[in-house]
Length: 263
Image (spheres, rainbow, N blue to C red):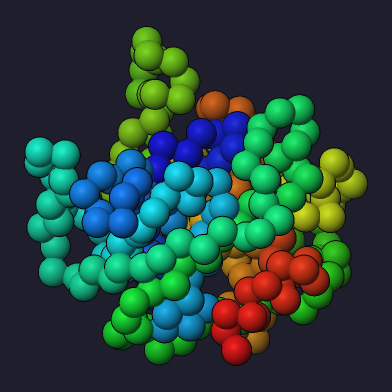
């Protein structure tokens, strides 16, 4: 989905191809019959049928299709329809909005509610046998500044020049799963009770998110287990640099809502 940077969406800066099995690309449709594709985003599985993504990606969406092809993904748009040339399975699903999410960008309102949504797949995903865990409530508050975190997504990787059509429309790249390392910034800011703030400085060997990465996981690894502490939500500029913001999954209300679908 052309997820605008000022409310987030590819991995930029220092991206590298990634094969995290539980991360997929989500095609978004404006109609239940899946005849009107309107964009794409990223998402990750917590079980064979429950997937997490960004709330803003699901606004105006009636149905989704998900693929776990790591890419580069071969596809075309023919007569307004997406034709996929790969061999990976396609899974249809239903979007579920987080009841407390308010999709507005007025002032600092984007910080006021958790930007998150779920996808309930019609059929269990085959081939994915290991899933990440959710953090305990308040877990990210125990992480020190500059803690390394892995960000994953299917977004664009670079900007073209000259940027005659504006910064947002200059983003390009292949449709594939990429990852990069970002670091925690521990600071109080408007919305820090619901969002993490991460570095997005490519000159320091780090990476950031851009259009298409929304909904991808922010992963903290401990003792061989992936803990998804947040999801990609938005960044602070159309150039997708500076800092990025990620919806915390260790908020008690968010955890309770997600776990209600995992029970």
